[in-house]
Amino acid sequence: MRSRVILFASTALLCTGCATVDLQNMSGASTASADVAGPEDSNVVQRAVEKLRATFASHGFGEKASQRKMHAAADMLLNGLSAKSVSAPDEGYAATVRPVSVVVQDIQLAKRHVEQTARAAEIYLEVAPADRKLNDELESLQAALIASERASRVFSEALPGGSIEALTEYRVSVDRLRTITDEFGVRVRMTQSGKLALSAASGLG
Image (cartoon, rainbow, N blue to C red; front, side, top):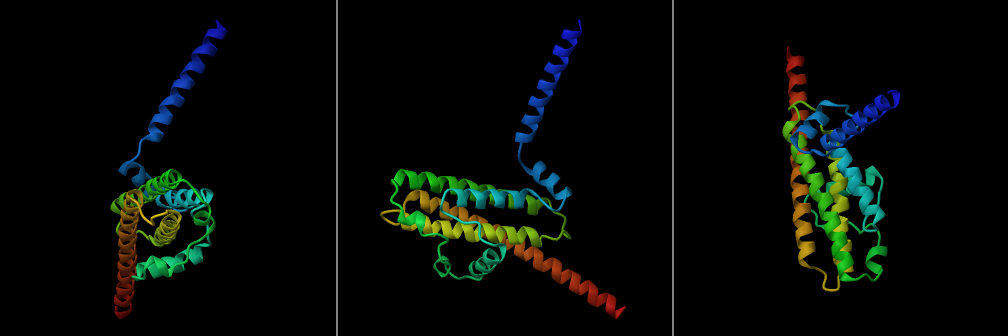
């Protein structure tokens, strides 16, 4: 009898675990909303950026440079300078001869991470309260943007013809990431301007 009880309890736990996995695999606005309401030290945007940078670094077409270097380089890109103004992180990838099929696979992998990061940022910005500070998220997105731009250069140099359809599609994804990063920048500036105006009004009062 006791063994039957133990077996029943174990089965229940396994079923509970399965349900948990299914829920965790669900993504969308609800996940981003929960992250906005949760601890500020980590959220869906920052986690997506870290995964992107770690993947780029582990596959050789990116590096996990310091946040300061990434921030400075991203500022240049956001201010309208071309990607050529920023040096590629590592010439090793382009210098190593690879089949085009392998480069295409890497481009597609990079594209998925760029799209996931952009999508996470879009949802996060949509559900974030208007007065929420987004400075940390903006810096993370800037780091992802510069990493993505540098990877684009590396891929181009690694291809015999310099460009293929997969690379063109990748660059479209990078443009999407740039757009949402710009939108975060606008929100940050608006929040700062609002605080300054409130402070000035309080001073007059």
